[in-house]
Length: 103
Image (cartoon, rainbow, N blue to C red; front, top):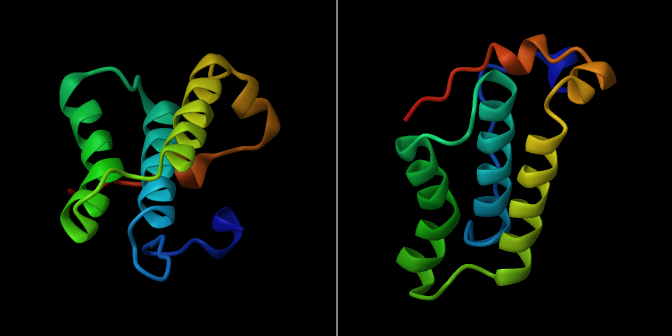
C-alpha cells in the first residue's frame, strides 16, 4: 500500500504511544535500514534502542512491553538473515528504499 499511495510521511500511533507504536516505529526504522544498509553501526543501533525504549521510560516510567520488544527484535533478526535477496524477490521496495529517515 505504501508504494501505491506514496505518502510524504508515515506515523505509527496507538492510544498512548508507548508500546505498540514504539515497537512498530522501531521495526519500520530497522527494516528500512536493513533494505538500504547494515543495521550494525553504533549510532543506528543507539537510535533504534531509543525508538524502542524511550516512550515507555519517559511516559510510564517503566520498561517497554517485553512481548512486543521480542517480536520486533525477532522480525529484525529474520529480515537481516533474509536480506541477501529474498526481500527483493518478494516485492520491489523502491519507494521504501527511497525513504529518508529524519532524526
